[in-house]
Length: 390
Picture 1 (tube, rainbow, N blue to C red):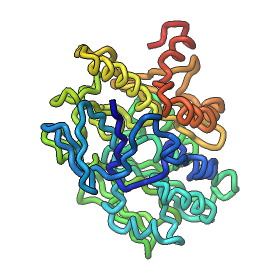
Picture 2 (picture 1 turned 60 degrees about the horizontal axis):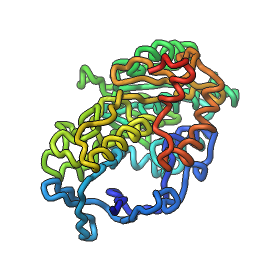
Picture 3 (picture 1 turned 45 degrees about the vertical axis):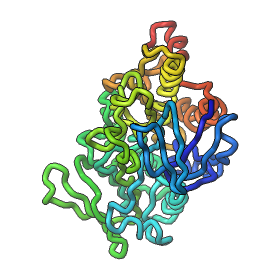
Picture 4 (picture 1 turned 30 degrees about the horizontal axis):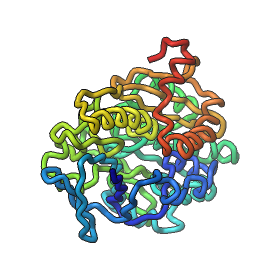
């Protein structure tokens, strides 16, 4: 059996642990901490085709790459991630590319170092943080960027001179109610100006203005002057998925069974991660849990057993870093109900969860998850809850 690893984006030699980017933006970690050479993280025996996928033809079981190579498959696992559409907001790319603009984003290795530089440079004025009106990966990361920055301003004794503003397109500060009330309370305690149902639609770099549109009343806009602007870009499913007949749902995401991860139409195709339409938060923790389900079901399928052996419950985790020593470890399922690993109230800030996020999770990723040894904390949860955990 041959296993091919294909990149649909540009050719690349590095692999990034993306959950660390928020910490890099806060000056807690360095970009090199999140980077490995691609050749060092691929499984042994995989044939690395370092080329871009431009066409998927499920009817003939083939994919085609940018240089014209056509590869046939018996089974296809699609894990293409999600597109960062920085160019969808007028003025944003120009602001990100301009060194002194104070416009930044944690959502790309290309721009993430600019976030901490912006934190260091700002002395007074308004620090503005946005959340787009699209699906996003790591839906807690925009708020984390805001909370870490606010804590940095306090550490540097300049918080009194800086107004912190958070604008989100969502109707609530966080999707899971179990954690939303605590997060909103935290923002109130720390005097963060939270605005819901507001979408960033334009950046005026010269005048340092961010234009937000009211989601419910699109004719209404809000113009905010900024001394620093952190932007989470609009995101979308990879366009290459649309090349395959009946591959995607109405929103362009890979259409898979939410329990088995098998494609709805093509039974020899499976999907995992951000490119799928799984109705859960798009995180590395979700991918870890999905990977175990994928392995069991795909292996059974390849052996001729068409009965799914495992089901995915929507488990995901958002380690909501709230500052330089604390973290709210949000864990929940498809129904947005808590699915917590530790026998503590995870709605509260905990220093132990901060170190779990900062130090333990990267080790799990590099040395366990990428090697197929980690498929989420389900077993740990059962042990810590004396067999009663889900």
